[in-house]
Image (cartoon, rainbow, N blue to C red):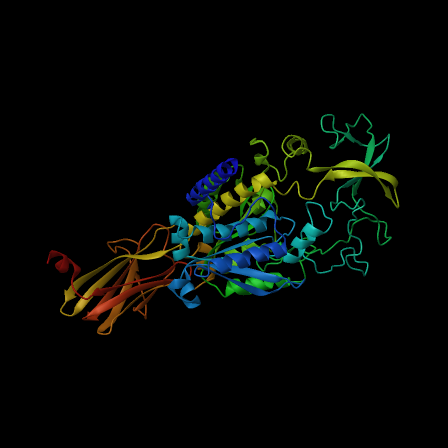
Length: 591
């Protein structure tokens, strides 16, 4: 009897579980709870893990994304680019007619969450297509090119080799930093073998440092009228090449974000500049791809740290038109609202000068409005508005470590043997703390930055033919007036683009089998009080720009009958077309 009762109870429990499993998953707002590609966003993926995720996404969503490699890095890793758009609308030639947006991360490989924000963006967009109206519309209307890992070799070096939170910033090609005829021969040394390059100190009754009263792991400089208990010796390392210096020739050094053609300067002006513009092979692969996709109208590059939304120009002697800055202002100020603790800034005037920066190149030589987001705002530690530097204050980091990381953010000071200094102590901040948010803050960082980038992408130009009016002026002679609009913040061509002829003008055209175009003119006002003649090719009217939220009027004088097609083509703003009969529009409406 007991056996039968137990069996019945088990069967009932299983049935109840089955019914419960059939119920839909309760869906919180944000990322899907039942994704096609399960993915967690509370850890950092190395090159192999990121590659695996990209391949999973591409396999699960072949109708809206494809994955390709632009070539191999110095370390023989693929330079992955994922294209996301509605591929049912046509092939790559059709994609070129849509406005496109470029997203990259990890050009400085130690800035590891930059890669994960791009990966999250690819995952979120593909998972939310068909679920979220905004994402669905963007994928239908736009093209997105995502390159998560601009420096894949150094990403793995940061994760799998001893490093600080600051390295390696550059690539892995050997460079003779100290000009002694050898390359990369004196890197930092992991004296205790824990995978972190921390600090060295030695006891010294006349030293200039002492432990902090409340946070003993934190070293502070003593006042001028007192002595300390320690002398600081710098980052963990030994003099590997016997030249009297420690850690002066590690992996690299060249800076991939000082390698771009616009305002490039050699290394004696700009530290980190390589041999010549685009001499970094990985950058050249990217530049070739971007230049082959002239429809790229916006760009976002992710870096860390400090919580900043940066626009160019990067050098103080470079000045961009006020009209372009006004567009950046509108985009950047919205970013401050979406990213609490972030500040919208100009790189040269508000941070430091950068010659040969990637996003300056995007604006000046590609014609795209581009931002750098410096991820990981110190504001996130305790939501205190006073935290505005690159890093949180030392005491804030130690407080956060004690209260929220439970002591996991720092290596406790401990004794090791040093071949030069003898008995010393090593300890301090781990490489996965400082620049990188902890696991429980990572997904929020990914989502908020993704959302800002989607909003920016939605403000790329999109040309429309708002209205076409036909008026009969004589027997078989018609006046055809098209109202062209761009209901986005970004114009079809930036002021810099127009001045320097970065991309061709927009084209408004008219054609019909039984129609002949006699003349054409353009105006910025509906009454055509001020007009500009279209010149020798009235059937194809060249327009400098279709501005943001302001109409552009084109009027043709056409002889003939039948139907004509009016179209507009913009390199950055897409295309639009419509057909109308050569019949007086006013008379037709009255009839």
